[in-house]
Length: 80
Image (cartoon, rainbow, N blue to C red; front, side, top):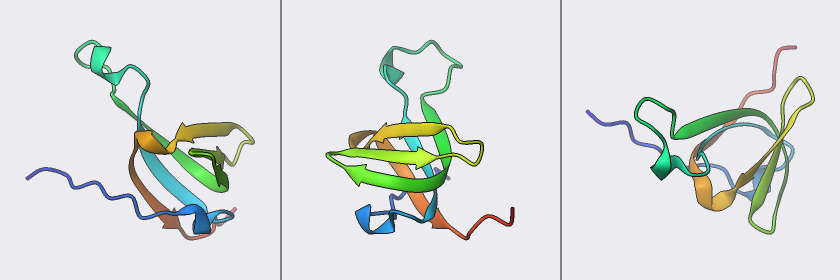
């Protein structure tokens, strides 16, 4: 059985904690065994002009092209 990925977040979720999976740049050119996807978990700080900004708990900021999204969902607030 194949995994079914669904993007269940929208710009209305800015401020919420989210988990997203997205295509890595150049995924089609990767060598066998290298990941084609990456994940980010944190607070969705913005979604504007086709780009999402996700702030990790440690302060890092990840930006993701909305066209690269494979899956996404909101999460409950962190317990920390």
